[in-house]
Image (cartoon, rainbow, N blue to C red):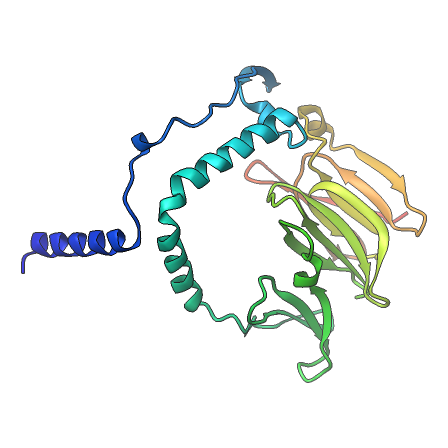
Length: 279
């Protein structure tokens, strides 16, 4: 059988399978979708001006934006409705190839083994650790399944452990966005949440003294702040000091010669280490 005949054969087979699942429709079978209104906004950066007609669509609280997104979702449901049986078949096939009851390879850091595991029927991982060795009692840091309860969307970004192993700074949101997160601090000695809730954070790290939290405020974005890299201080009652670092978004901490060094990175253009002396 020639290659052309083989292609024709599999094309016909796929067509018959699809007709068994759904009736093929064309875009022309439906009325055109609703178009978003154009509201021009001038954005000036680096001496240049550009016009964005759809900049307003990022505002999730704007009633006009919400109405437009609801219309888009309704149109998508209408156009894709005839493919639901095929969607269900594909989903079940892909799910059947995934090991639901699984566990990551543990890694050792500062006296603990860290890993996550998943359970059959649950959508999210469970982040855990064990002290000193893998035979030790499991300590559940974050059961993301419980955290996601009662939310239509939930994203767990990542977490960082303080050097004394007592605090966990973690990022999450209930918007489904991967652009920015809300960070919180969990006391691992009591499993209680400390009174820290910081929105629109892109990156963060905690100093080696376990008291100072550096974070990039994704809502404070401007060219001047890139040049100056200003530090702003807010004192929190339980002695955790928050330092806002504007514009840089990749933050890491390390100890060198008895001094804290914080890495400020905005790839591919900016990458530097800044010495920091605890207050």
